[in-house]
Image (cartoon, rainbow, N blue to C red; front, top):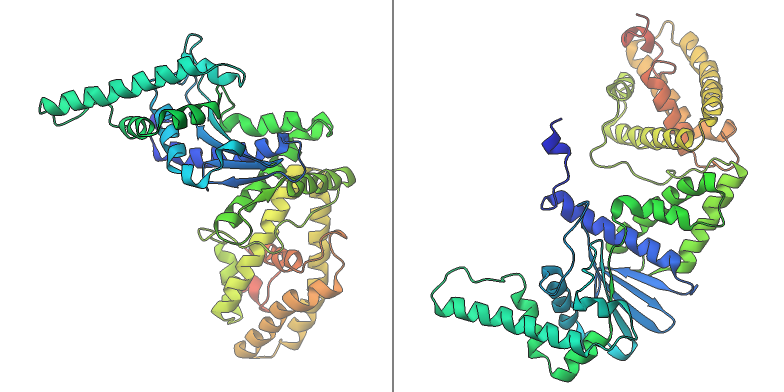
Length: 407
């Protein structure tokens, strides 16, 4: 792959996608750092991230970049005026007396910028307010002059809406908004958020912190998706996060297998190995059966991969359980082959279909689970499909020769 395809481009669609992912992961880190057990965050409601805690509402505008040295934020920054415009637009929905407005950016701030007053709540902001008014007036005047001169492309296109909205406010409202603003520069970018979360998990042994952080991010990402799809409340509370953290730590502490995929569905793009379908077709199973086995095959495959990644020593247990499933299957398959020695192919297909059903309905009931914590039938069902790919199990009496495994 060329270096052009590998290098991040701040103006690409990837940057936009990462911006949304950054909002999600920032919200996770933000909520974890909050002390109030009842605190809650919302993604993309009144603002990129909204935090409610202790009777206060905090609106946070996030400005992300993967650049090593993103341009410092100044009075002339587009991000500053776009942020002010976003806050002004939602003023009717806010109680400013109980609201803080945060501009969160991975960029730094110039040491001489008037915006440094926004780093300290105790700072008098009259000088900053005057500087913002002057900058807004300059932008509008330059656009008006360009328009009067017949120029087709007017300057400051991206900043003009924010400047106009700010100047349309009364002086008192301008001062009130600026009094509620905090600037949070030089924040971690999306590539660093998970590492930062791991460092903040001070109650977890250092060796386990990266794994716990990764599992928390995975869980959090599902909550964000479900919130946007209407599958759960938009509000994600800190007590949910703390509870999930405790569950993850307990799982690691007791070295237990967790069936994370027992009810999950494969992505639309997932393609199972062709041999899974070949095995199904040999016993003339319906299309419904094909989707059924692919779903469970994916669940088993994802579980196996995740368990080994989390703890490589589980590979031996997984392999042992594969042999256990194969042994139980072999008893049924051998009896079936004896019964079918003089049968027609149609009769063999029927018997093979019955064996396929056995792997789905009977086997999970009569074979002990791989671990006491894995009680869903999906793992047994799916593992039989995984084993069928290499020919270790099959459904048709003659599957070894028909699918050329004997070679």
